[in-house]
Image (cartoon, rainbow, N blue to C red; front, side):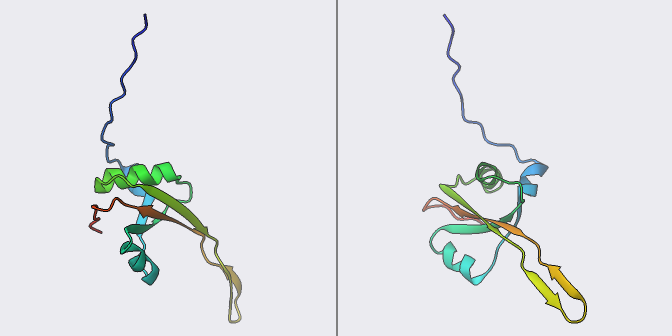
Length: 106
């Protein structure tokens, strides 16, 4: 008979890649208002998935997120006086929901 392998939950190791996923926290009026509801906003890497963001938050802040929403804000085309047009950068944001008793020190 084959024995079943028991999967134990391991604490994720903090590596340099984890810090590459979460670029910076977003501090704006909207983000402050959402923080009162238990959400935290981060600018994340363009290739990051919801699972990557959840693992990074858990590894860095020792808090397991309850939910992660991701938004991609496309860069706008802007015109400059006498210099033609340019494009602002595209930003990927993650809104992370935390448990009711959790607080992040940012």
